[in-house]
Image 1 (cartoon, rainbow over the protein chains, first blue to last red):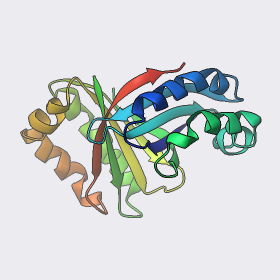
Image 2 (cartoon, chains in turn blue, green):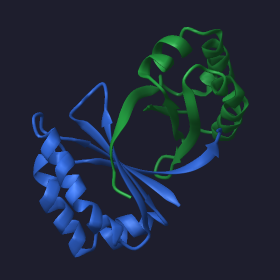
Image 3 (cartoon, each protein chain N blue to C red):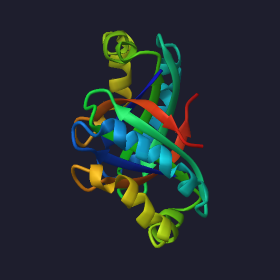
Length: 99
Length: 99
């Protein structure tokens, strides 16, 4: 399992609407192949910055299956207009769980 | 509860030693006031990039209590020499848990 971290800066003033858009999109992620969890994190230092944490079975479940789906278009329709800049996306793997 | 995300780029070739250094530091974090969990994530796209995910009760448990402690010096002694650049640290709060 891997974790997608999508750093999303939204246009100042649209934070609440963006959060609502993500909530609306939850069922859409829930039905994706290999999608295991979704959580939205909001930066304390920069309140217009969010990080979407999404667990997938594989990187390709995100980059190929999801991005190639009609649901991806739907996702962007729900939240894309709030983006101040293109999201910065990276995938990570847990290499140590301390406690 | 908040999550500290510390993005750490290490000098290429020191990844394994850095991971071992983090493992050695686990007991040190475990005894910090308000420190609830620690996990180390490694980037798939940039293998010399790590993200330390640390849950704290409050931001100040990290920025004041921990950074002001002798254990912080110890932590830096264990891993600081592997850093390629100063870590980028941000704190986030979960605002939505989709599933």
